[in-house]
Amino acid sequence: MIHLFFGEDDYRVRGAVRELCDRIAASDDMLQSNTTVLDGRETSPQELLSHATAVPFLASNRLVIVEGLLRALGEIKGGRRKKVKDDDPMAPWRDVIVTLGDKAAVPETTTLVFVEGELTKTNVAFSMIAPIARAVEFAALGKNELAPWIDAEAKRRGVKLAPRAITALAQLIGPDLWMLSNELEKLGAYAAGEIVEQETVAELVSAARESRIWDLTDAVVAGDERKALAALSRLLVEGQAAPILAFMVVRQFRQIVLVKDLRERRLRQDEVARQSGVPGFRVEAVGALASRYSWPTLRAAYALLLEADLSVKRGLQDDESSLQLMVHELCALAPRASGRRAHSR
Image (tube, rainbow, N blue to C red):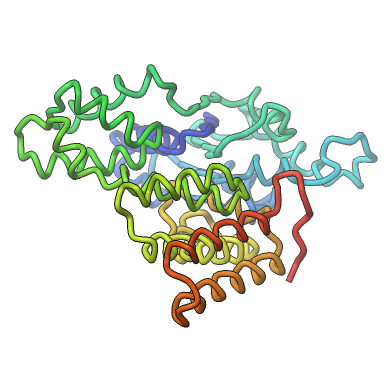
């Protein structure tokens, strides 16, 4: 059978894959040795077909998981135009997908799983795969869906949350289920079977303050000066030290440089997260920002960061004045979403 799990909510996408694997493994203790994971960006049509049509070895099931293929194919130029077959870069994939949809060609023992992030329904590869697959989309949970999810997940883990604690978690973290999962784990360990109250959530959930810092750093990188200055003012009023905030802005640009470089080297998302130090749930957001920056612009940003640091060390400005000027200059430097095209190094 062919499955397609996709959507903005990576946590539930991965959960669906894990649940499917566990269900197959429950009746086949040799599944692990008959499981293949393919990077869709590096997989050829024949390689995919070869794995999908192979029979399992000393087992009753074969599992083939393909990561990011549809998104990669959707970026192929010319895939949507009518062309002579030999000139159409999608032609080999069309042939393979037709074969995959033929029950006589693919053994019943094969379970083929396409794992994707957010996809547009106009993606040419999606339009080819969806008709032959069990396609399930996992959109980000809405405001009214979040509290019930937290409540159910907490109960599944044996974590007792007071109603106001559930509300606090939903407000502080939002629909980031990876972070919610991590915080539920911490809260459960801390409470040791006791009921978790709202005050405990406020005390332990690190995302509350960090998310406000992301409001500042993301706004700076996006060039939204009004939002950046408002976030900066709020953080300073709350008692955040200007040198710490300046460090966080520097860290954001460092992460952008690392993520941009690693993505250009076509590393998998989990490798990008590991090598850059960016949390997995933040890689997409940082990558989206990085894609708008050219390397010359990033060098100019680093020059501004260095200038701000030196102005404080030389006594030319105090920490807050230097930080405010730095935010203003970085916002002015930032490319807009519809602005300049990025240049290669």
